[in-house]
Amino acid sequence: MKPVTLAVTCGDPEGIGPEVAAKALGALLPRDDVEFLLLGPHSLWGEALTRWAPRVRLLADRSPGDPGHPPDGVTLLVPEGRGPERGGTSGGRIAMRALDAGIVLAQAGIARGIVTAPLAKDRLPERDDAPGRWHGQTEILASRCNADPLMAFWTGSLLVGVATDHIPLRDVPRSVTAARVEGCLRLLAAAL
Image (cartoon, rainbow, N blue to C red; front, side, top):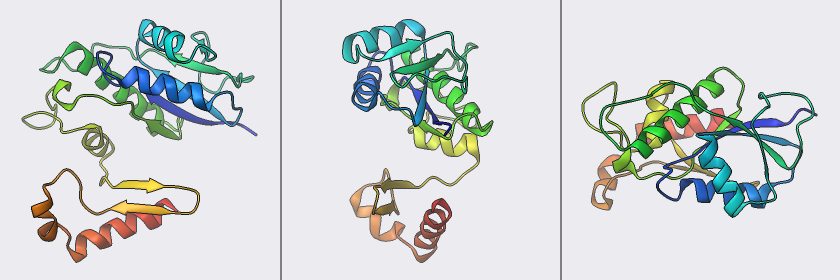
């Protein structure tokens, strides 16, 4: 059976993103049912895996979907291009390039999903489609994919959709409307 391919972003290289992702990969691997594509600079992933997941092999000479995927290896893809230049920090711009690369891979059908490593939202570059800064990776994904975001928690036996996000508790009663709940239910049903 061909493994499921998941793209993993590096998050903010100056924050905990690479550490969290590397530790998760170290705990998950080896496995032959998933191929992980690491998105970000070679030096960043090499250092993170050496430090926090030394059993994991970094494969820089593979392409996604190449036959013979080793269960203890991860494929490295370094996003090309300069990426966004307005605002943010260099780490924020690196994180944004990795996320954009993951979106391209998912939209092309190469990756079945994107795992986003943590980043500091104030380090993200300015929006390219509207004034101001991005509020987070969910907002970027929604914009790039022209989709409605829905935060969800999924276990083997339970799927929970969150009807609100990133708002003060006092605003919840005004935000939880019949239309909003219906939209969440439709998205959850479509995901099943």
